[in-house]
Amino acid sequence: MKKSLSSLLKKITIAELNQKTIKKVIHPLKDILIQNEVAVVTADKICESVSDKLLNVEYKRMSSPKSLILEALRSSLLEILQPEETINLLSLVEEYRKKKQPLVIAFFGINGVGKTLSIAKLGYYLKKNDISSVFAASDTFRAGSIQQLEQHAKKVGVKIISQTYGSDAAAVAFDAVSHASAKGIDVVLIDTAGRMETNKNLMAELQKLDRVVEPDLKIFVGDALTGNSLVSQAELFNSKIGIDASIINKMDADVKGGATISVVHATRKPILFIGVGQKYNDLKPFIPEQIIKNVLPDKI
Image (cartoon, rainbow, N blue to C red):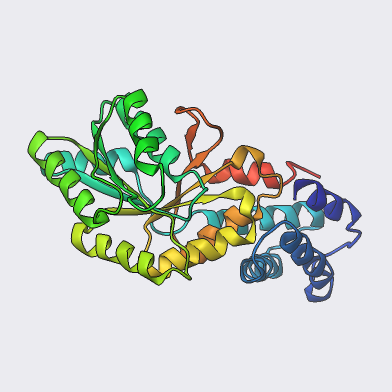
C-alpha cells in the first residue's frame, strides 16, 4: 500500500484543491485501498473522509496539494484506527484487583489463526507485569487442543484448568473462574474452539459459554494474512457474540495492511495487541501511528 500510495501522490499534478480535482484523486485512491485488502465499505469511508477534509481545508497559496492530501489521508486513517472505546488492559486488571475479582477474558476466532498461542503470549505478558493468570481449556472439540494449551501453560508457568475432550466448554470455563476466585488469581484466559458460521451447534456452544461465564472481555483473534476473510470473521463473531477488542496475528508478514484497518472499522472496537512472531514475547501493544507509518509514505 505504501508503495502504491507514494506513486499516486507523486503523479498528482493539480495546482489547487476543489471538488473536481479532489475527485481525480479519490477514484484511484479507492482502487489502491481495495487492492490492498481494505474492505469496500471501509475504503468508501476513508475516501469520503479525505474528500470532506480537503474540501474544508483552508487552502494557502504556499501549501502543497500533495502534502494536504497525504495529511488528510493520515488523519482519516487515524480516526478509524482509534475508535471511541479504548481499553487499557493493565489498568482494567488493577480495577478488578481492587474489587477482589478475577478479570475474565474469553478468546474467539476460527481454527488456525493463532488463538491458543495468543493466550500463551498474553499469559506471559501478564506475568512480566506481575499479574497472575489461569488458562481455561474450553476448546474441547479440536483434537490436540487441550495438550497444546497444557504445553504452553507449562512453558509460561501458568496453571491450567481442563477436562476431557467432549466436555462442556462452559463448565470448564466456569471451573477456571471459580478456581481464580478461590485462589486470588488476577486473570482468567479462556480458550475456545474455532467456530465457523456453518457449524451452528458449535456456535451455540460458544454462545452458551458467553451466557454462563459472562466474560468481562471478549477478544476476537484473527490472522492478518487472511485478507478480506479477516473482516468477515470479525463481523461474524461480533454479531454472534459481541466482541470488545481484537488481537491480530502475523502482522510482521502482512505486506498489504488493509484488512487490519477494516477490522477496526467493521467492529468499532480497538485492537489490543498484534502478533509479530512465534515467541512468547512476540505480542506487542497496538499503536495506530505505527500502522499508519507502515502503510503511508512519510513525505512526498
